[in-house]
Length: 149
Image 1 (cartoon, rainbow, N blue to C red):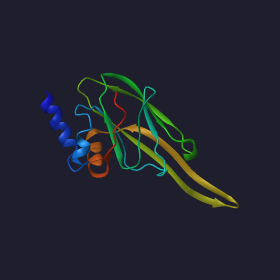
Image 2 (cartoon, rainbow, N blue to C red):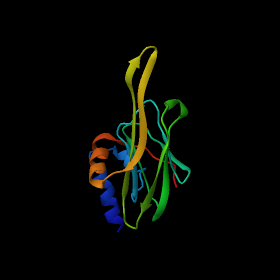
Image 3 (tube, rainbow, N blue to C red):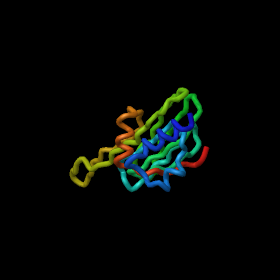
Image 4 (tube, helix red, strand yellow):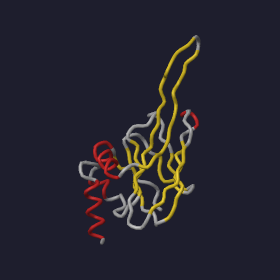
């Protein structure tokens, strides 16, 4: 069973992060959270699981952790100055299941009026199909270690 988990970890990291980062990543991770591109790009939102900080996740980064089977509340907390709203979702992890969650966000100038600027803002976190998430993580993202659980 352990060989299978190591093989899965190696396959997930193909064309991904450097070998030195692989050693710090949990081989038996069953929750992956990634941020391919979420605006505003200057800020790194904090990811919390059941109110415990996991990581501050910048663009083109991902993290991975192992959770026991159960339901968890994942929170995305942006710094106040980012102008973004926080987001949260519940994730249920079943025995032997691996889940993927994407961080999204938009912060763009959408119009100009007389002495007024209009912005489009929004952020979120969402479940992603594993086959899609593995491709995105492999092509874009570097591993960012979270706080050990």
